[in-house]
Image (cartoon, rainbow, N blue to C red; front, side, top):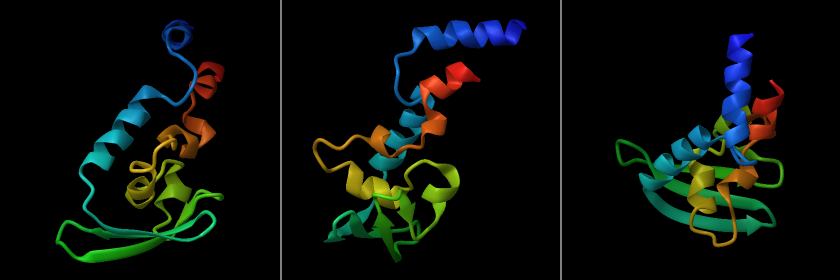
Amino acid sequence: MEKWYIRKKIARQWEDGILLGVLKDLNAISKILKVVKVATCDDGIVEVIILDDQNNQKRHTMDFENHKCSCREWQITGKPCKHALAWICPNRGVQISDYVYEYYSVAKFRAA
């Protein structure tokens, strides 16, 4: 009971949207990306080439309408992978929180 009370008290202080810890993690990842090329192929389909830790080029395709990446991290975790962040971050008017699953929302935390 005490744990539920503490969670409700904390959740009341937060604004609606995505949990702050999740946004901080995604922002930290976006700052260390080594992007080589981002190419828009079709509506909502983007191809990204990124350098990995060994400076090898890795190519991945994203479907932003369905929140999917060829690395499958986005589908598994519900948070945009680094390949998706390579497209999201430089685009003005696009928010990272728009591409995070509802599971990580403050509303879901409050409901738990």
